[in-house]
Structures are given as C-alpha cells and as structure tokens.
Image (spheres, rainbow, N blue to C red):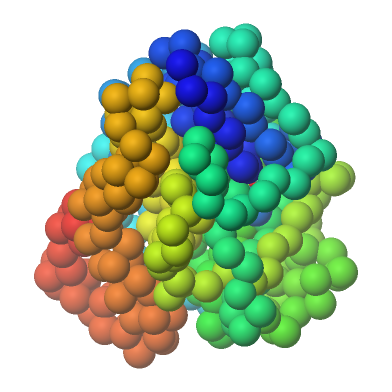
Length: 334
Ligand SMILES: Cc1cc2nc3c(=O)[nH]c(=O)nc-3n(C[C@H](O)[C@H](O)[C@H](O)COP(=O)(O)OP(=O)(O)OC[C@H]3O[C@@H](n4cnc5c(N)ncnc54)[C@H](O)[C@@H]3O)c2cc1C
C-alpha cells in the first residue's frame, strides 16, 4: 500500500486521515499547531449527512453537540427575521471536536506530527488540507471568544454591524461561542472582545458582552480571508484549501468534512496502486467541484447582499409578508 501525507490537521485533514486509516492506508498528518486549541469558527454545523458522520467516525463526539433550530437575525439589537431551520444544526466547540478527531486518528494507528509545517508543493501522495490561502489584500478579519453568563434569545443569533456580522450560539450548558467576521481595521484586535464589538458598530451586543464573563484563553483571530478565491493549482487539495464559503452559511465545516469523504475513493485507488497520481487528483477535484461548486457560488453571491443594510430591510419586509423563501435559500446553499 502506498503512503499518504496530509499537510494540515484541521477538520478536512483529520477526517481524511481517519477514513484512510480505517481502510489500512499508512497516513502521516503534519500539523503546524497543536491540540487542543481554539479556532476562529462559529462552531455551528449545518446539514452534516449521516454517511459523512459514519465514515469519519464522528458519531461519538457529535453526541456531545447541542442541536440548534431557531435563528434570529438582528440589527441594532432588534430582531429583523426569526425562523427555524428545516433540520437541526449541531453546535460544538472546535477545542473539543479537533481534539477528539486527532485522538481517533491516533487510535487508528495514524502518525500525527504537531508543530511541523509541511511542504505545499505537489508530490505523489501529498494532500493539502492546510486551510485557506492567506490573502494580504483581504478586507476581513475573523474573531471569536467563548463567554459564560450570557443569555441568548434563540439557538443562533446573527447580528449585523456596519459592514460585518457576529454570530452567537450555545455550545454547552455554560458556554456561548461568539464569533464574527469584521472589516479589517474596524476595531482594535488587542481590545477586550466586548469593546471590539462596540468599535465595529455592534453597540447593543457590546453592552451584553460587557455584562458576560469571557472565557480566558479562548480568544482567537485570523486575517487574510478571501471569499473570492478558488485555488486551481496542480496540488491535491481539500477543505478550505480548495474554496472558502462565507461563514454566514454555517457550512464550512460540513464542506471540509465532506471533502474528505469525496476525495477518499480516488485516493484509495492511488494508494492501492490502481491509478496514477494525476488521475486521482483530477477525479477528486471533479467530484468536489460537482458536490460543492453550486453551494459555494450561491453563498458568495448572497454574501454582499446580506451585508447591505437596504437589502436586509427589503428582506425583512418580504419576511413580514411571508414572501421570503428562507427554506428555499437554505436548501440551495446546503
Ligand atoms: C469567522 C469565521 C466563522 C466561521 N464559522 C463557521 C461556522 O459557524 N460553521 C461552519 O461550518 N464553518 C464556519 N467557518 C468555516 C470553518 O471554520 C472552516 O471552513 C473549516 O475549519 C475548514 O476546515 P479545514 O480543515 O479545511 O481548514 P482549517 O480548519 O483551517 O485547518 C487547516 C489546518 O492546517 C494547518 N496548517 C496550515 N498550513 C500548514 C502547513 N504548511 N503545514 C502544516 N499544517 C498547516 C493549520 O494549523 C490548521 O490546523 C467559519 C470561518 C470563519 C473565518
């Protein structure tokens, strides 16, 4: 059996590693960071299908996730639109999820090398699962922190500020995850989260966060997010490395995990010596673009509309007359 090297131990890399190890393929994952660790993420998973859960052995950890159905979209602290998801989302801390997946991979006999940066050139057997390609001209930063003593008005609250948005969701009995996509330069990333939210135009939310208890060491931030980028180099890539979907969909984690199962068969064929590397790569990319291309394109088209205050007021007016096709939009993006 040929060996596979995965660069990046996030959800896509760990997922692929687990699925390959369960089928007897020798796998090494190179991860620049370590576990457990907090990640910038809304920690809200939508539309994760049972087959992916089973192939990636996620059922045990996801039993600890909280189901979420009700969503309220807010502006200036007031509810704009409230609706229910057609199927419950799952809310789970990345601190827990990534750690549990790393443990599963190790239990299956995988080699996990942490604190190591892998090479990102194409090489037979090398899969890039190293997340988004940083873009220096990006106008977005992502921030997140956990809070205690924070009441929510629904399972998921999404607040719009001047140009960005912040989502709040409960991930366990005590803890609420607060995660935002903010325009670069709109706030001081060294300030406490509540202050940052105020600077970025989320006055009402900032007041609520001032009264809550931030969880020490859970703050993290990322920059260089480019929601127009689709990589087309000659590497074998999965997850965010292939294409980023805007976070309002709550679908990036699902795509990362599903991209691991989508790439599995072509990689298995290569590992067993039944196909060449170029053919395995081409097949994996074709499958991923068939499965995710439409969702990513639709979400990217909707993203600027969502950030436009006039468009949101129009959507609210439609919603009041029961004319906003929330269910259809949800189905199209998932
Ligand atoms: C603000 C924000 C909010 C979000 N909210 C949600 C949400 O609510 N729901 C949802 O489903 N998705 C959400 N997402 C998206 C989701 O977090 C990502 O889609 C998902 O984490 C992608 O997984 P991945 O494995 O492809 O990449 P990552 O999770 O980024 O993992 C990549 C890994 O590769 C490692 N790495 C990078 N370079 C190297 C190297 N050269 N060598 C070794 N290791 C390397 C990194 O350390 C990292 O661990 C959000 C994203 C942002 C920015």
